[in-house]
Image (cartoon, rainbow, N blue to C red; front, top):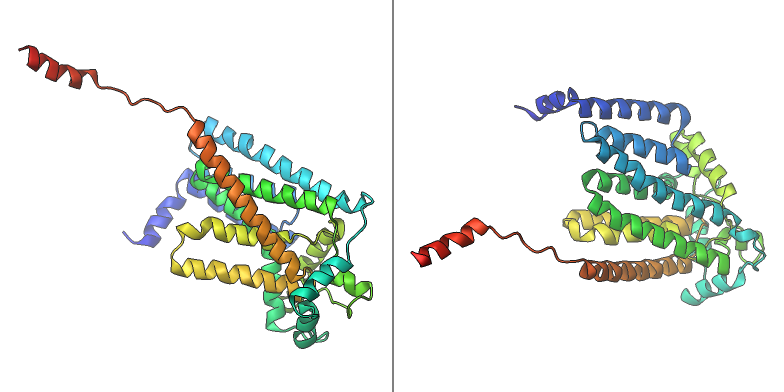
Length: 324
């Protein structure tokens, strides 16, 4: 039986049919409405995919999807709302300090200014501009796609990933509230460095996806404009790489390392973050992973050990032979 024939037979199963209907509906949504970038739209599509993947399983298993995901998404929604008002708490915005740290790292130079001076042309969209936009927007999808795939495979593999997402998100949120800091484009608008262009979404125009750039720009306008340190774009990418690293072959590790580096370069070139912001984000990843790993080991050590069942019949046979 060929692979195509097995796939055709699988599509006839209730689960295969449910996933095919979901895929068709999602494709229609992408073509007509664009990519779902807001939290609730993404959640709705992820839950629909999980319910489709769980067709045929006991109803309690499907109910567990809501029990697991709704509190998880609720915490992230609170994070989104809090992040949007973190710059309205009255704390002074730090503009010169992150810039000074960047210049200290690079001998008085600012990598964003250098990259835009040598690679950005206002009237021309190059192939690297498209790559930058693709890599940048992947932040809004990859983390949650991984979460959905892990959950579909095993809830036990999903829980640690969800825990790390929440820990990293709230660590960033607390920092934004206590230390609001400005990105390179903000410093450019303030006249501290040469003007910095917003390049994160301009690559979409080259592939005629104007709506994608508009959607992302709309989301950025409602987010915290002074949430540069740490860079969660870079941090989530690095955390994903560290999380899947032990499970990958050499080519998978090369791919993830390249993706992590591409995200860092895209953020700097696009004027969204300093290299300093990205390095701080990596430090946060290390701290979150260390704390999560130690807590999980401590929690596992405290679980009661279930004694193995003893087969009384097997124990009785030697005793009877001895008595004989």
